[in-house]
Image (cartoon, rainbow over all chains, first blue to last red; front, side, top):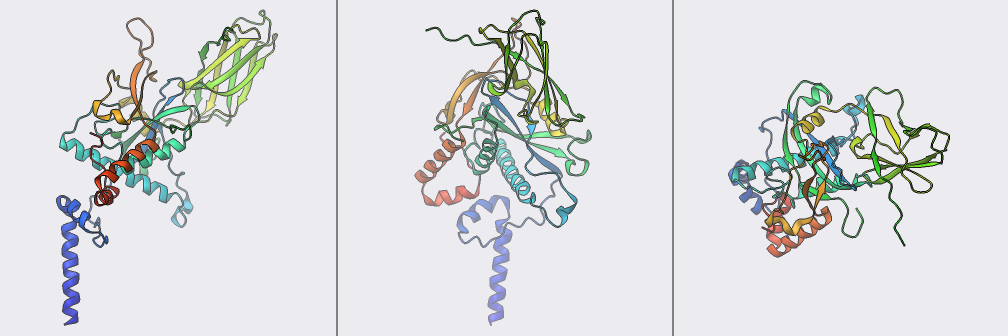
Length: 190
Length: 195
């Protein structure tokens, strides 16, 4: 009898997990799953074929807009990273944030939202989302004192992990561009 | 009392050397007027208007070469300017060249600079986002396309609030919606805010 009960519970759990991972039902299940019992099953997700790169450009105190520059979230890969890789956490965090921002941007593009801004069409919509604010705060705290405002871009570059950051081969495209933001708090701090 | 004269800022010719054998930037200053014009010249190197180095050249000195430690690889050469003046406040004509070691542009940088080189002109402020707007101001894009009068074209852009203000705005909005929605919003990206 007990084994039947356990089997039934596991079967229901499995069924709910399958339903929770159907994209159109995901939000509804997330809202009701207060105990976070239903996993986000990503084993069969399409593998990532492009590397996400974070870039920034700044408006300096005298009004000069700089060129786009790649932000190094973690140091270059070393041979000992197989066993000890302290840069993996920040790198994975950036990838997760970038993926969420891009997914939001794609959803908003499909919804046909349009807003005239400095960044991509969805930059204004995403401005108070957690991933956007996290990246903005990270960049604000790493800014030179001459920087007045900053803007970031998330670009997808093909095969960068294999061929390197400077290789000429492979294409890339812009996934998301933020608005320009002050990097100093109203009180004068960062 | 009259305000002190502000010396004119001159652009610095920057040579980005990706194969440099040295690891500290070097600044080369050369008096355009030659050694004939006497007087000590005081110079100041700025990045985006923020002073990063300063020094002086004596009256008989025509060329000065010095190492500039505060110039970092992540500084953009378009933001470097130099002011030079004599002791009495007159502007001194000085040619400035900075040679600095920088890594070559990455693939992502080359793509971004090619596809999104300048800034969009924004004559008006987006109505829905006015509460998040900090300022609309003119900037100098890195691609200095000249206007019809030959003067470099500026762009008017909207600059939005600092991250702390946006965060406060987000918290306020979530409190207005109630605890249930704040839990949801923590897990997913937002829809339109303050619309």
